[in-house]
Length: 112
Image (cartoon, one colour):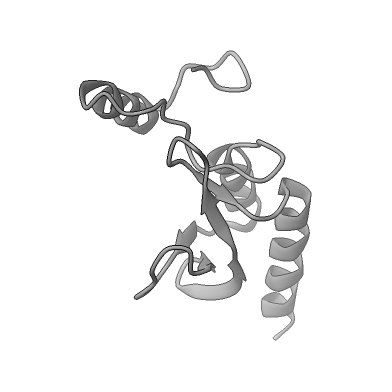
């Protein structure tokens, strides 16, 4: 599987793909939004814009508990997630919804 554009796949993607193939598991796809946009492709742009590191984390969670989106160490909002038929993560909002929510939360933090 290739990315949505012609750039080479990131090392972590290649490594996950290799492991899944070695174990005869279904195809690897990195986490993505409901509209099939890969999370890493959009998150890196927002990280550059706001000079933060964005992480999706679940603390003491079990599937299918929501995870929290963090900017550096600041929790911003929760996001639902599910697994597709191959066990890959799909976050339960579109990239547009994610961006709007992220910008709204960051603007709130900056106003404080």
